[in-house]
Image (cartoon, rainbow, N blue to C red; front, side, top):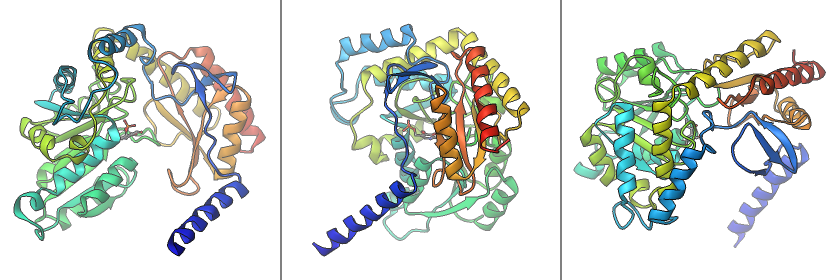
Length: 406
Ligand SMILES: Cc1ncc(COP(=O)(O)O)c(C=O)c1O
């Protein structure tokens, strides 16, 4: 009883602190689809924070595919993939994403988060599974800015975790050398979700081969985006899944505009994950509508390269102009364009001023990023117009001057 009371007191103190310093996150309710113009609190605002990079979430071809799947399969998937939830649409999706990525086979989960935790823990716990407890630990080597779902997967693996400096291949090699004789798994985001920069995958892949380490990448923000056909970071660097990258993980929740996560790799890897990933086995399968919408989105971006071209044109236009007025966009070279603000308080103020001017651009602050690195994280969509972007730039110029940032 007293334990419960103590814990509740602690929770109360945390909430009081956040309220006192006005730090509790604004969580605005959005009414309507993920378009460049949305209604929030009865107000029309420009959306500059969507993961729907290619504008496919409300595309009629994609929406119709989802509706058709609901008519055929119903709204839910009825069970786990190992029991009653193994639908033909799931298998069709796995074959499609494996082909799109150039791997041998694929496995899908209901979310990207569950894909990461289920894959990392399954891959690094196998000695225990087969040989019993007490074997040599695996070493997981992870970029310091990897996504929270990777960090949680690493923690769930109960293996030794070594973090290397962000995108720093010299530091990575030092660690690989130190653990030369151990089983090693190197994990990196392809595109980093808060900074919008790209991992040096070509160099990382060479190092992993040299030191006999497994390589896993998280393609959440690169799938549908990077490379000539949108396959992702491997295509951008002219690398191939299986041959150069052992585990290609990704989500359907960004450019492919739906929900769900996947891993593409060798046939054996996929067969293994289907019997070893706890978040795959003990969770209800992806919905039929989400699965069908991803297949339709893949069809669209394969057939119509102009969708991706519009997005890149907008991205370059935004980056060039926001830098011109004096903002630091870190090392971003993708559709995720952060502007560095610094303190949490100023970033909150900046985001609220944007909203008052009819722009949705939330701030990202500690603990999502390091202290002093608070930022406004803009994302650009293929469906933004130049007028939308011009209005954003003008607003950032005015607010930046008001707050003494530029
Ligand atoms: C890099 C990265 N990995 C994984 C995830 C988790 O994906 P999902 O939102 O589909 O669960 C995200 C989501 O924000 C992400 O940015």
